[in-house]
Image (spheres, rainbow, N blue to C red):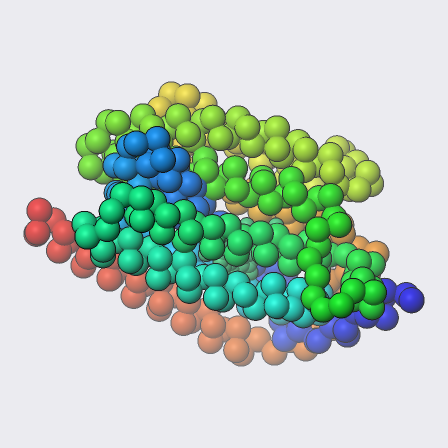
Length: 347
Ligand code: HEM
């Protein structure tokens, strides 16, 4: 069977495709940053709690429910933009994953309740049950992350979709050797940014121990992630590796920008400068997200080119969207201003 016959037709786009790609990359960068603070700080907190120091788990645990809510909210926007430009790939992979994919909602709700219970029942729970609840809620998040990696890689491989005809029920993309370094690259990155989040929390509360602990995790995890990133690159098909090594100039420039930003990030980490590290972390995640977008473009190239999608040039709803975006951002800015003013008053 020709796998191309399994790809649904692309729907026409109302405006130029580049708008959706830019919005996808920008909003996904925000999603990754929040996801990293959430998953990474939870992992570090659990590790330390199991070694007898529950202070990080306690302080981070109080922040996990709002971080989870923000991660989910920041995930909705890229999901919508992804579906506009690449829905005919992403919908298929979601359907092929079936129950595994639907279980993401149950896992998210489980983790949400778990972290809320941890926060509000902290005093009344014993240490062991606290740690078990924390670990189980974290496991829920790891499941969600792994399912996203499965979906985002399965959507790129229409040739693997034919497994549907030989398997009973839904399946994952576990036959893809890229899946493992890709997922690990995300998770080790999460630990690094989680460390940075703990440092910022320490800086905010004038707790030097948190600043030091966070920066150590931040730099060590980043160093390890250089190796994992290299493994990820080498696991890609050979033509794609060459694209990042000079064959495709924009892609090569993007990966170089990511590596330079990662170098600056490490330097800020070694100098124990959390605020500078934040700037470089945001830039690194942004450039890495652009690099990941190149990976998607190269994978889909034999099957689909976004430039070929018809455009109907109906810009009115886009202007409406931009208007709401500006008003919404101004509203959020105003609410944040009020919030910080009221904190100062309470202090
Ligand atoms: C809170 C738990 C979550 C975790 C740990 C998580 C983690 C991840 C990870 C690791 C990826 C990258 C997968 C890859 O490319 O290999 C990812 C991608 C993505 N996530 Fe999340 N995610 C979470 C929740 C959500 C939710 C609730 C949504 C949507 C409502 C969402 C939307 C997305 C989208 C759209 C992408 C792909 C964007 C793109 O391909 O450009 N995430 N997520």
